[in-house]
Image 1 (cartoon, rainbow, N blue to C red):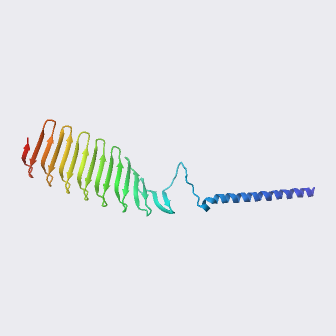
Image 2 (tube, rainbow, N blue to C red; image 1 turned 120 degrees about the vertical axis):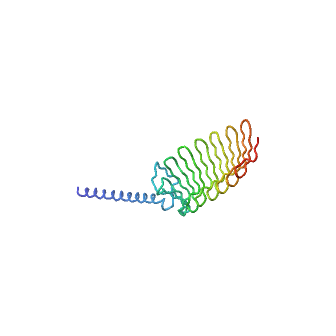
Image 3 (cartoon, rainbow, N blue to C red; image 1 turned 180 degrees about the horizontal axis):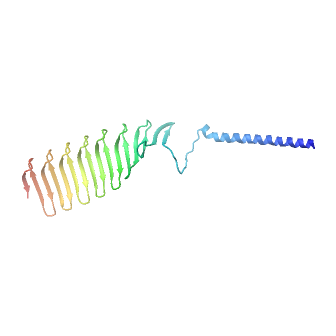
Length: 224
């Protein structure tokens, strides 16, 4: 009996040693397979997730960051940055709508697209921040305006439900040409450099009028 009992113990020890070797071998295989992505540089082509929580996303080419998306520290929006960390685009949300801003190389916004409850706006500025082109849309119509380098409007076009106008101004912002259209007819007004009308032509459904004035505003000729 003692000899058989000793043989049973030896047999169990041998079985345990064999199972232990299998476990060690299995653990080594698991470690090797888990390390393969890091050892070979293998990366997943597609990552699917219902929700990603982060403050920064970086796009890398050849191991170098070429583009980043970060959360704005002040506004409710996102900034797209270049490889140097300079701002390229801003995407934000305000109380009445959203806004997209495009930055120049000095990180100043030079083009802006905004949306509110009842209208939209596109604004282009020069490097000094002065508006040089603007387009507005509302429920009644729209406006297109072009300014000089000083930010003064020199040409504009307005449209509403029944009336449309086109105006041209001088460098001081004074209107020198004005074209108007309405359901009754149209008119053309030409002013001098001081903005005083000197020639006016208008037409209605029944007749037309031409008026010429001097610089003091006195009529010197008209027809009929």
